[in-house]
Length: 186
Image: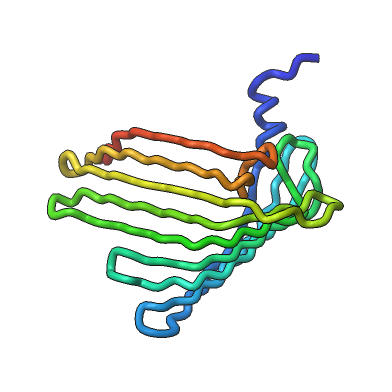
């Protein structure tokens, strides 16, 4: 039997219900500790899986527009998936990161989120693998054209071996570019 495209996408693309929280505690001048927790139920035509995420971040505001951080993330899936997405037992990621956001006098916004570190994965029923590189980049250039109109260019890239939200395999690398025109509706 041939499965219609619309039904196939519902089968392999899980529907997600999630809840999460971020707690941020200022420690010293410019230094903040963040705790992140999230749980999600991923439902598809094939199964229901549960993903939990915990992260700890130490972030230092170097200037009002530049932040550097040390981050540790742990993602767990309760079971393997038969719906076509990568659901290892455990993913651990340790990264040094930097977030830079600059707004020009003409209200143009430039933002960059960079991360360099390592990650390791444990498949369901297996021991943790070796540490390997984890790189990420997100950048945004937003140019206001007129009141209520903005031209945006976004670049998103990941070379960490795993994408924590939607990967279909343990070997995951991508680059995504998007050019969009945002128009406010009355």
